[in-house]
Length: 461
Image 1 (cartoon, rainbow, N blue to C red):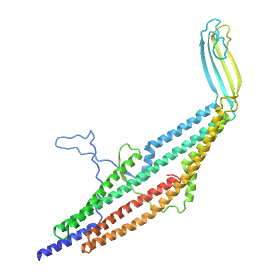
Image 2 (spheres, helix red, strand yellow; image 1 turned 180 degrees about the vertical axis):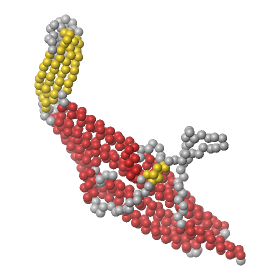
Image 3 (tube, helix red, strand yellow; image 1 turned 60 degrees about the horizontal axis):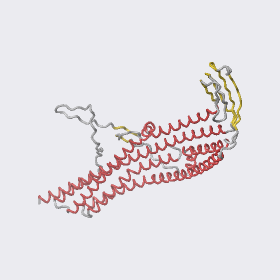
Image 4 (cartoon, rainbow, N blue to C red; image 1 turned 90 degrees about the horizontal axis):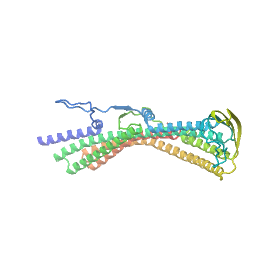
């Protein structure tokens, strides 16, 4: 009689502990960090062992991550340098409007009465002399050729500036994606830790009841299977969490994997805009890719005009002055001359006309690229808006699913304790509750990421 009372009391205590463990969240253990490599300054002494230096954990919010990427990411520096190089091209083309001055120093030792008799048309008489002088040329007009080249270079420089802005937006979008993905994986890791702890407790309790002949070996087998599944979930979550932190470190410009404490956003979740058409119009007006391609299209038009103007004359002013301190008696003293030169292209194998047609075709292709880009941006904005709307709805649905999964788990535990159901039903309820926790943990970060991508697709981050 006393033995039966003891067994009953043990069962009540065991099931009470099981119910409490399933209804109370497990303590969140921090993810174990790999041991740090000791630095050379960490010396060991007799009887003492040097302790590894713990990694420095950096608190990081999404805005801090964006600021860090803007400062460290090399892709942004490359795009900025390309834009600065394009500005120098403008100076190069504009230099054709300035006078071109050259200084010459010439020394000739010639044989008496010598002549140059072979070669192109030239002045064949050469005299012994040492002379110095300068020549200056100034473009008067080439009927729009150089001015169109300058306009094209300016437009291309503005296009490269917008491309640098687009690169910055791409990096910021990648930062937000890596940041929220890391938060998602960390939330799943916490759920996996809680799942392992709760299923380990259940397996221990079922094992004790099996030893007391109150539960069958089948129940113990199912409990151990559930525990093994939870451990596999934990291993996958741990791997995904480490991979997400590595991706975040790389996009922030760090050569090594850093340790971050990710700070969640405190602002409440707001629904996305109700209408997508204003977002598409805003994207057409503000997206740097569209602005860059518009400038490139205008630049191609100017190149076409410049190539067409190559067939027009070029008028230049020329001036020369110099002296020969050491000279033959037949060479006069200081010389000077001014003049105007009119250069008329006559025939060069139709090269100028071919260049003009090529530039015209490329300008047409650029206009078609711009139309295609507008279509793709319209599609991307609409897709991002639909994704954000669906993600916002999933937040509420995921919370409702988690609530129902918790209720189903409580009922399944009660039925199992009363012997009204098998452990299969309890295992199914545990699986659904775990899936509900994972879905609820991921839903908020998925919606915040969807909002960030929607801003990226419209006005930029």
